[in-house]
Length: 376
Image 1 (tube, rainbow, N blue to C red):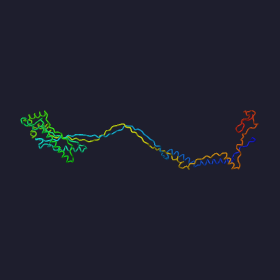
Image 2 (cartoon, helix red, strand yellow; image 1 turned 135 degrees about the horizontal axis):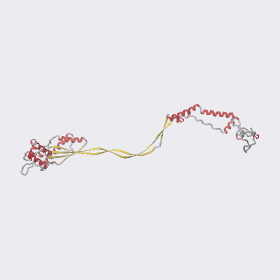
Image 3 (tube, rainbow, N blue to C red; image 1 turned 60 degrees about the vertical axis):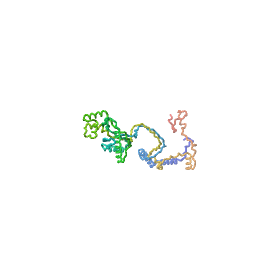
Image 4 (cartoon, rainbow, N blue to C red; image 1 turned 60 degrees about the horizontal axis):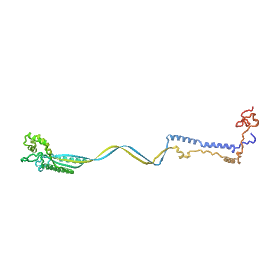
């Protein structure tokens, strides 16, 4: 050892330093005791379990309200309902008997078939029950062409193709009588006739061809005149040749009638379907809430903080703290650490080799001061 070398003094006795090291190791063992080690293992297991599908806690987070809008385009089927009036007209005929004395004849207005009254009124009632409105009714009387005309020689003739005011009068009488019969029949049902328009009566004059055919039958069957044949047909049709009866039924008897036309209407709904493009603008405001799932094991530090022990590292003591501890143990202050020099062992002169290995004149030595080679 070189002269004047003083070994460094520890601020604490060796036994005290040893005790401090033991205390630190014991403290470290306290923080990693078997119980805490088991707790750490359990928390790791819970972490794996929670991630793999263990129980979770749900938290709802409400986001700020947002506005939204968008346009919707497409094709749609549209059904439109329309109201329209359905109108109709129905004509019916009631046949009349021959009236020799025209309108003054007691048979004027007598029906060949009395059931025609019920047939006409039934039509009116049925229309009303079907939801139709019977708006009005036209009525017109007719008369056949023959009459009691007397010629210039004073001979009575059938008066074919000659207008005679007696025939329109007969037609009016026939229409009036039928109107009364219809009103009576409807009154029995608690109904009334619709508004009636009485049209002018018609005398149906024969055409030239029809008169020529009558002349043919007169000559064929040996009648004195057409008037004689027509009178026999009107008074005793059973004694008249059937061929004559059939023809005179067509041109004379069929014109003895009353014609009725019923006008009615009804409002009905009709539906029409078609496709059309559309655009709908949507807008509004919405509050959104999101749900977050957190594994329960992550909530252990919050729900049970006492179950988690976090090691707190020991602070490194300062020189002042060490000096205070030394003063307490030995009753005196330690020597100044900075005043104690530390000297590395140096070789003496007789150990120097004649050959200088470096410019300082010293032999190579290790950091511990040992020589690296022998003298030689």
